Image (cartoon, rainbow, N blue to C red; front, side, top):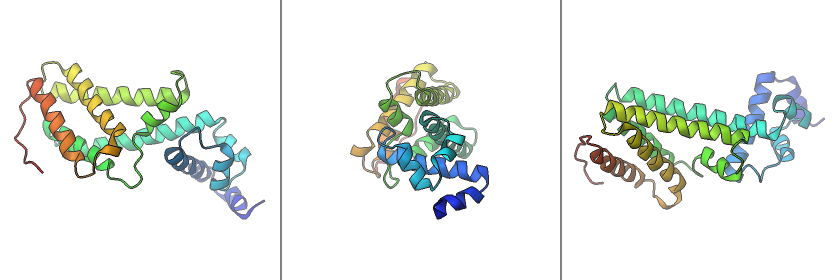
Length: 206
């Protein structure tokens, strides 16, 4: 047994599972799910293949776990931004767009993991697609709720348009400079709000 695997054998089960998931998540995001095999994951994680399968019976289960972890992180960031909005829906939308724009500037940013994985699996019933689709529906629902609170004429349509704006930004981050992202999202959102009868504040051009 290699030293890393011997060490893994002494670790707590939760620690081993998290190590495998962290390693797989990093590889999936950087390389793509289909390009990463189980053999590479166990090598990088320093565990036996039987150990990986003990926690994740199939690679599909591991991919789904990766997206679920991304989902938890995304909504924790969303909730933190909502708190900064202090109950003001317009201020909250601004805060949401600000942290989303900041994601574009992260080192080695490769876009939204849910969108990336969905593109790799055309089957709508694939476990990973199921997680990704639920995430995107939740994003639309949260924007729709903000639209209702801002008393938009058609909250459902505005929520969908804001979701499309953000998802389009995730997919187009390679052509948007980090310092352009906040303005692009903010001004596009303002145009949508005006179209739905929501008052907006004049912004200083950056």
